Every structure is written in structure tokens, then in C-alpha cells.
Image 1: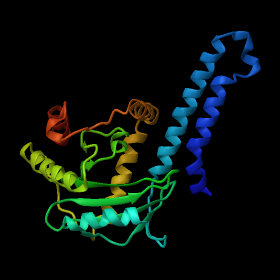
Image 2 (image 1 turned 90 degrees about the vertical axis):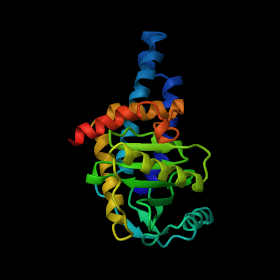
Image 3 (image 1 turned 90 degrees about the horizontal axis):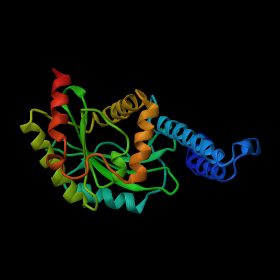
Image 4 (image 1 turned 120 degrees about the vertical axis):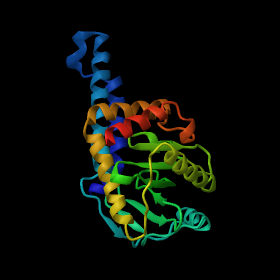
Length: 259
């Protein structure tokens, strides 16, 4: 029931907001044209509140990873095979991730590079199959994520949230760019720690918890930022890390906060 509600909530909210904008209640008629401004403000408040609820459900306080019994997904399986061709190895079974709506996740780990791979299918309507590469910083202070999906840069991060969104890149290109970024960060004094199949589930759940903590520190402000980024198609961390405007300042903030 909770999963179904999470799937339809964005659709319902969109319909309600649309109705509010064009059908202000009769009690606002004395306001004249200003009644539409009132409804815009009310609709905006509803939108922000719904985003806070959606993110809170997608980033639960305690996220579970349960081996899945769902049927195979050809698109997901094809991505997993491309990761294996890059040298990645399974980091456990295929999981159902206990968020709302539930997602399907395949975790992988590289035996040489300090990199996890995640291939996943969202539980949204419609479902989206995507993947990314993740490295974790020493001291559990953040991480580096590389993907071709602009949604990966929608939620605000902190100084330890390093992101590369390379639109249109293949998994092979993304992996090369990710490894380059790991090496580049090392030259700036930011090191990634080792990873392993045994540590994957714990590392994943801690990463979700960290993202929730960042968002819930200022849920209204962060929801507004997420809405703006979605509406404007602006992605935090677009392009290769070394070429991103403001990256040196972010590294200084990170190193300053660590000291």
C-alpha cells in the first residue's frame, strides 16, 4: 500500500496543483485577479511539501536491502554485463531496496580500483533503468559519483559530495572518467578508500543515510533547490570533475571542514 501510494503521489499532486491554479474556490472571488496569485502561492507550498515527503520516503531513516524474487529485467541485466566486461564483480545478490517506491538494485565492486558500481531500476511510474559509479572518501566524509543521469545532481549535497554528470556517456566512458577523477582528487589531497563486496550493503545504507541527513538539515530550502534544478534542467556537477567551475573552492571547503 505504501509503495503504491508513493508511485501515484507525484501524479495526484500534479493534478491537484493544476486544478487549484485554474479553479480558485468561490470564497476567494472578492479578491478579483489576486485570487490566482493566492492559488499560485498555495500550489507552490503544496509542491514543496510534496517534494519533502517524496524525498523522505525515498531516503528512509533505515533502508533495507532484501534479496529480490522479482523476474529478470533485460535492460538491467544488459547493463550488469557491461559492468562485468569492465572487470566488475557482483557484490551480493540482486536486491529490493526498502524505499518508497521500492527499487531493484545490483551492486558490483571492482577488484583493483576503489569503485562500486550500482545498476538499478526505479519503482517510479514509468520505471527508469540506470547506473552509476561510486567511490567513498576516507574518513566517511562523502564520496564521488559518476553517472549519465542528470537526476543524480538534483538533490543538494555538501562539501564532500563530488559529482560528475556526463550526459550521453556510455558505461565505459563513465568508468574511465570516474577513475580519472579519483586520481585527480588524490592530487588535491582528497583520497578514496578501498571497497569490497562484503562491505557493499553497509556502505550503501550509510550513503543513503548521509544523503537523508544532508537533505533533512534544511528540507524546505533543499526541496526548492531540487525543484529549480529539475525545472531548469540544471545539474550539479555537470562534466568532468577537474573542469567544473568552483571545484577548487569545494575542495578547500572539504579540506577545511576535515581539519
